[in-house]
Amino acid sequence: MQVREVPMKMTVVSFSLAVLLLAPLNSGHAETGGSRYSEAYPSAGSKKGLQVEIVEDALTLGVKHAALNFNLCQLVEPSPRADSVSWEYDGQRFTFNRSYVEQLDRQIKALSDRGVLVNLIVLAYQSGDEGVNRRMLHPQYDPKAPNRLGAFNTVTGEGRRWFTASLEFVAERWSRPDQGHGRIVGYIIGNEVNSHWWWSNMGRVSLEEFTRNYLRAVRLAHSAVRRQSSWARVYVSLEHHWNIRYPAGDAMQAFPGRAFIDLFARSAREGGDFDWHLAFHPYPENLFEPRFWNDKSATQDPDTARITFKNLEQLVSYMERPELRFEGRPRRIILSEQGFHTPKGEDGEGIQAAAYCYAYKKVERLDAIDAFILHRHVDHPHEGGLLLGLRRYQPSDPEPRPKKRIYDCFRLADTPEWESAFRFALPIVGLENWDQP
Image 1 (cartoon, rainbow, N blue to C red):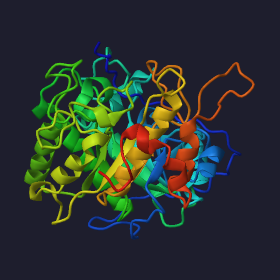
Image 2 (cartoon, rainbow, N blue to C red):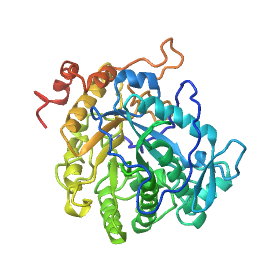
Image 3 (tube, rainbow, N blue to C red):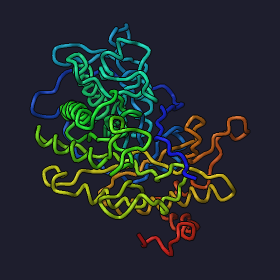
Image 4 (cartoon, one colour):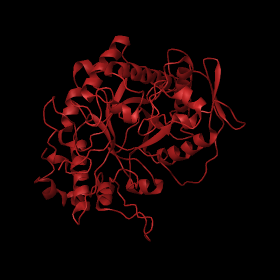
């Protein structure tokens, strides 16, 4: 029986940390033609990353990369309060929610102070405030959107100003050299946009119309970020359907990733190319089956239906094409959200852990990929039955978040102990050694 495929889930990250004092806010507008701050892109000790829920545990695990959800509709505060923080853009003052900014300060700084490279996933969730929705959500947003996630409003003048001011504000705050509030190294614009009806909704639209609107948002975000930081990266987000669309949608709700990225790149060149990069999600073809090495729809050719960990080399090869490069260099790739379900039965944890071991060794060999950010830290009770975590979620038990077998594989993945930790996985995935593809 065909197991139902479910779309990828995103959840808001929560932390429990001591409150940090907010330093005085800098505001202003960078001069045209250059960045306010100039640095080199930072390096990481490995590709090991996690969508973090428990900061202290993540640091114990030795994460080198993290991705945090960032809701623009929670950030903006069009009706300012006495404690609002503000930013001036194009002669206008824009105000933002201080408590949300301070919460993000705590989350980001706790990680980046320990050398973790943190990326923000920039989203726009439908708000209960219609004034916020008018400014931040695309005018064609359909309230029936399954996950309340909208495309960005870069259509109206008011929407473009709020979007641009918001990205300038966060880039100045979190991509500045002193790292006073923590450091963000990359901004992922939207989520899995080739399945836009679920994750970046602007109603029922054609590939051409969606790409035109999304390109405008990515270009505005890139310009806003680069006016502050010379090195912070801006990413396009895609899920694993490559030459087919997400089967639950029609042609006005989802697009093949390859067709989308080709049109996006061509349209960007026509309007003046810029330095965008790719955040990809190579989940297994069936989200409930972690044994990606058995995927049937992930083949070793450019016409593959899906790109999963089985044929991840196809993504790297495709992105090396001359027409997709920027100034002769291939775009950088991060894997910003993907994970492995824990099947039922006594072998379930071993299968999940083996899938991670095999995937990590594959990614480690692919120089074009900078980060493998695992989803999730802890199993989530509202993720369609998926059990993707390093830890279980058992709130009524004495130990509410017990570790699974994958936990120590993850912890040791980039240490000298990796080989002994990974050895059990070889017969499960059908390899004799990790040098095999």
